[in-house]
Structures are given as C-alpha cells and as structure tokens.
Image 1 (tube, rainbow, N blue to C red):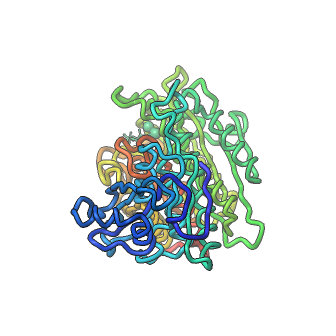
Image 2 (cartoon, rainbow, N blue to C red):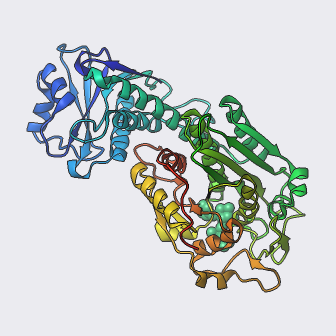
Image 3 (cartoon, rainbow, N blue to C red):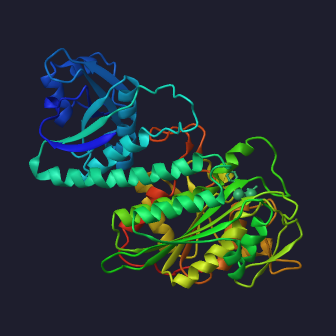
Length: 506
Ligand code: BES
Ligand code: ZN
Ligand code: ZN
C-alpha cells in the first residue's frame, strides 16, 4: 500500500472511498461535515435515523451519487470525545481501513484523525491514523497457497490536510508511522513464523539483515563464542537442542549528541517445548512465540535507527530452542552463569530467565544508563493481568513510570508488580546460589527477582510480555496471533527520553 499526503479538500479526492470519523453522539464537524455537505447529506440522514451513533470502532457506509468523485464514504466512530486518545485514533483508523478493504476498495483518502476536536497535534494525528492503517491491514499469509482475500488489497492511502500550514507536519507524521508500523509488522512476521523456520540461526540472520539495511552495527555469536564468553546459563538451555544458539549484538549510535545509552535484551526462545520438564501438548504450537522479546528488540533497533532517535541503543538477543534432547539440562542440574552465580535448575521450562541472566550480565559491558528486557517469561503474568497489560518489574521507579506513560499513550499497557526483598526467599538456593523457580506463588515476581541478580545496580525494568505478545482474538489494529508488542512501547519511551532514568529504588 502506497501512503501519501495531499493538501486540499477531502471531498475533492479521486479515491473510491473516503474515510471520515465521528465522535459519539455529536454532530459531524470538520472534514466529516464538509464531505457530507458535498455528498448531499447522506451521512446526516444516517445519523437522523439513528442508524449510527459514533461508538468507538463502529462503522457505517454512506453512498454517494455522483456529487463527488468518491463512490462511498466510510464513517468510523471515535467513541466519546472526553475519552479520546491517540490510541483511539489508531484503533478507529484501523477499523475504517479494514472496513474499506472488506468492501473491495482500492484507493482510500482520509484525514488525520483527532486533529480537530480530538485535540491532537497535526503530526500526532496523522501518525496515529497512518499507524492504524499500516497495523490494521497486517495479515500473515505467507504459508497459504492462496489467500481468501487475494483480490482485496488496498493500493493507496492518501492523508489529506486542508490547512496548508499543517501539511508538513502531516507528512512527517505519516512518514514516522510508516517506519513504526513496518517495524511492528516485521516483529509480527518473525513471531508468526513457524519454529522450524524461525530458528535461532534464522532469527540472527534476520536481525543482521535489518541492521545491514539501516546502518546498525551487528555481531552474531555462535556456540564457540557463547562458551568462550562463559554464558553458561544460555549454553545450558541451548545444549538440549540440535539447533545452534545465537547471541546477537546490535548497536545503534546516533549521529549527533547522544542523550544516554539504553540496553534492550530480548528473550529469543524460538520454540519452548519446556525441555525435560516438558509442557503439556495443548496449545504447545503457540510456543513458537517465545521469541517475541527478541523480535521486539529487532523492531526497536529499527525504529531507533530510521527515526534517528537521539539515544544510543544496544540490542542484545539470546536465541535458542528449549528442547529435550539427549544432552538437555536436567532438573537438579547446576549451571554457572556468566556473572559467576550458580543456578540450580529446578524446572527446565523456566528457561527464559536462564538465557536472560547472561544477556543482562553481558549488557553491562556497554555501560548502559538503563536496561530493559522484554520476555515472554511466565504464564503467571497472564493469570495476574490477562492479555491487556504487560507486567513490569523494576529497580528504577523513574524508568517504570516512563514505561507506564508510554503504555498509556500507545495502548501497550504496562502494570507494575513489586520486587520487594521479601520475595527473595522463594528463589534462595539449597545447593547453588539461586534456584530458577520459586514454587507456585507469585510466579512472575519470582522470575523478576531472579533476573534482578543479573541486572545488578543499573536502572532496569523487566517486561513480562507473555500475555500481550500473542492474541487469540485480535484487536482493530491486530488480526490475532503475534501483536508485535514492545516496539511501539519502547520507541515511545525513546522518543520521550530527555535524560537517563534515575536509580531510585533498590
Ligand atoms: N515461555 C514460557 C512462558 C509463557 C507461557 C509464555 C504462556 C507465553 C504463554 C516460559 O518459558 C515458561 O514456561 N515459564 C514457566 C515458568 C515456571 C516453570 C516457573 C511457566 O510460566 O509455567
Ligand atoms: Zn519455558
Ligand atoms: Zn519460554
């Protein structure tokens, strides 16, 4: 889909569908009203009849009889004006373009959602609208011999701005959204790919290719280097699989003055069978998504580089399968992590924290001002927060507050769980320094407490995305399956970053 910006009136556009919006229980204003008047009041008739009220993500279609070049107008509801957010603009735009696609539309023209009564800046509104379109039209059909809606593809989207003084801002917003949307969709593609295709080797190659395209420094380590770096926890998981592990280092350096360094560590378990502590069969197929943190890390590095964000970002990916091969780590085995800490593996299915232990430790060699890890770490976070929020655990209240704010803005919600020292008891080692599991209670926190040992004194936040990285139902801007969570969240954090977070909690 080609996305462009145009100056002028929406109603004059040569597109087969015009996409406009309406706040709940309000009279049409701005572009919606202008289009309606030019088209002979067909939207007003729908509203008069009470057939459409403007509820969030509801749609109606008004047909045009020759008065303007377009064939139809899709109207999408923005919900209550008082509850409006940029994320609602993303949702509504996604709903609108999906409706247009369903109708077989080829060319859509629209306006920046929320720029008028919604109170968003022109660039912000244009970004939200375009992002909704790019994310909303995402499909994963690479593995279908022929797709059901092969013919139904939108070829072009034009974001039209009436006020000439704002066209530049709209163009910038459209451009940023394309970068962001493509990065999220790239992460989604990686996660949706079957485990046998998205192996640790393939994952590292994808990361390398992305880096090459965007001028990011990238190194990929194989088994020998991993062992030489003493990453015994990562190796402990990796040796249970025939697939070789990979450790990926991506370094984005801003061309101007940097406002600090953020290290992002991604869990890259390309398939989690559970290992010797094997998982039950039901829905095991979904465990190809256990590299969602790694995929998000690739997406984050991409947006940072292409948007030229003023923060140095180091992306670290620990990639391996978790399999029950003959040499696999066994319950009761003790591994020595890179930091020197010894770990008794009580459950081989708690492998994410093992590989991240070494990634977090290695992150320190880049002297980061902050570390964020993204990991599909625990089923327990789904019990606690469902699929609506990512669980955050942190050693910096400042960092976690920034993540929460970024979550509220993007809709990739974040909620904090505590890492109080009282929880340490649960993972205290009997024969080694620490255990990799802490019993049934507070499962996500036990994971966080474990990782805290390796994040040490650098302001750090752990994001448990087990509930948010995959969606059975989908959302207006996600068809179900991989969500690409984390890319928008951390990109927002980086865009709002003025200075490094403080280490204000221990
Ligand atoms: N990859 C899983 C966590 C997961 C569960 C991700 C559901 C996505 C959806 C992780 O490696 C795991 O198996 N965790 C165990 C930890 C337990 C053994 C302490 C879990 O959550 O059961
Ligand atoms: Zn596991
Ligand atoms: Zn896992």
